[in-house]
Length: 108
Image (cartoon, rainbow, N blue to C red; front, side, top):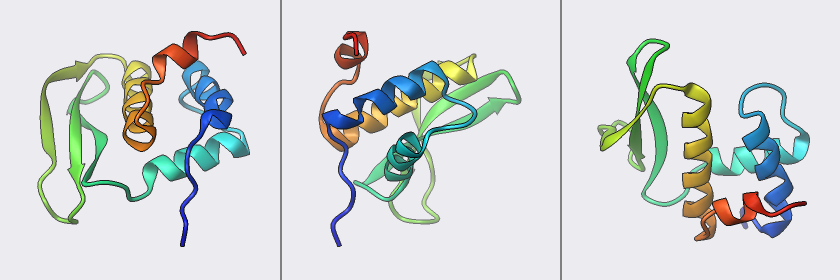
């Protein structure tokens, strides 16, 4: 079964996410998020709570269920919105091989 693949046609949804990472998402953005949250590769990025409501660390969830989450040294966040945006960009890069930042700076 072929899985939905992210393309440049999904860039408007990336911009939508960057504008409002938390809350209601359009059906198109929800499709993108479902793809990002599904299985792919040997790991996926996650947030690990270090201090409730105040400090998060970047982690890598292994492909094998039950294996230990690997903490990424030196990458912590004090703002949940910034953390969500960073993980979205990392997952985009993992799925497409492209850095999202140059596309986000382009006008629509």
